[in-house]
Each structure stands twice: as C-alpha cells, then as structure tokens.
Image 1 (tube, rainbow, N blue to C red):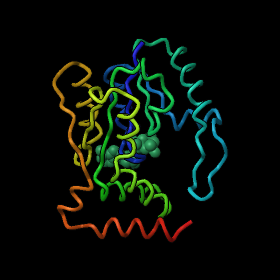
Image 2 (image 1 turned 60 degrees about the vertical axis):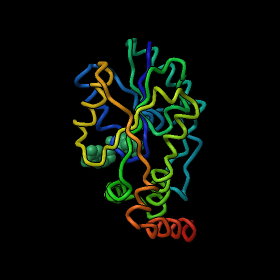
Image 3 (image 1 turned 30 degrees about the vertical axis):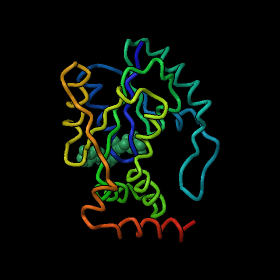
Length: 200
Ligand SMILES: Nc1ncnc2c1ncn2[C@@H]1O[C@H](COP(=O)(O)OP(=O)(O)OP(=O)(O)O)[C@@H](O)[C@H]1O
Ligand SMILES: [Mg+2]
C-alpha cells in the first residue's frame, strides 16, 4: 500500500486534477473536504472564516479506514492538510500544486469566498504554507511542486502521471514573494494585509 498526496492551497485545482489522474490510472482518491463533510468530522463551524473546522484526529482515523476498505495498492489523498492526517511512512510521493496569487484570487472570488477568506488563502499561497507543512513532515526529496497557473487540469494530471510512471519530472522552484518583488508589486501584499487587519 502506498499513498500519493496531492496538496496545495484551496482553489489551486487539486480535486479537478485528481479526477483526471483517477480516470487515467484507475487509482482511487480520497477528497478530504468531502470526507470531513460527509462524515461530519468537524469541530464546528468557524463563522469568521465561513468554513467548518476540520477535526484532524477523527479525519486521520477515517482516512485509515477508507484506505483499508478501498483495498487498492495505491490511493491518492487530496487535501490542503493531507500531510497532517496520513501516515507519512505509507506515503510514496507528494505533489504540491502552486498557483500565481492573481489567478488564485480570481478562482476564489468565483467561488464566492469572502474578502477575508480570499486574503487568508492568498497569503498562505504567497508564503508557501502547504509546501512548508509537507517538507516539515516528509522527505523533501519526495516532494514535487508544480506551477499550475498556465496549465489545464488535464496537463497537470499528465505531469503527475508522467512522474508516477517514472519519467523525469523535476520539482519546480516557486517563490511568489520573489516574483512580487521582481514585478515591483509589493502593494499587493499591503492590500491583503489590510484586509486581514481590518476584517474579522
Ligand atoms: N488548471 C486550471 N485552470 C483553470 N481552472 C481551474 C484549474 N484548476 C482548477 N480550476 C478551477 O478552479 C476551481 C477550484 O478547483 P478545485 O475544486 O479542484 O480546487 P481544490 O484545490 O480542490 O480546492 P479545495 O482545497 O477547496 O478543495 C474550480 O472551479 C476549477 O474548475
Ligand atoms: Mg478539492
């Protein structure tokens, strides 16, 4: 049994990508958001953030159980907190999808997220929070970042499949902070910072 993690900030396209990988490789995937909601594995509702608070302990137990029931040699786990709820010793590889903050903002806005929730997620993407979570708990050599900004979900899935089939895929080096400074766009950071400090 081996696990493949697909992680990244909400809205980067994990679930749409996983659907293509599942279709092509016939590998099942567990969508952690769906799992938590369907089985009510939450600690309640966070009104400030407009979302359910995930209960990592119960989600972790449920993921183990789902994996056992799937009876598949390989299972994909899709979620921005995947690394926190899986057994990392069973994990073969982790893909971190990264998306340009401007494009991500557009996608989150289309989802109808509040200004605060958009700002929180964009700041998390700029700071590489999901990437840090993964490299802190898992062998960094098995972590692959993919910049999905200009790729269709099918193209992203193809890159993942190529890597899983042992073709060469080098992890990309993605640093949105550096790009923001290069583009002389530091005002973008102030914009989100202001939203975070003035909204509750
Ligand atoms: N590569 C892409 N190009 C264009 N649109 C995309 C791409 N990937 C995802 N999208 C769109 O962005 C939205 C978010 O995608 P998706 O639900 O897969 O994100 P997610 O990473 O699974 O988010 P969450 O962590 O909240 O589950 C969807 O409307 C999807 O169609
Ligand atoms: Mg999803």
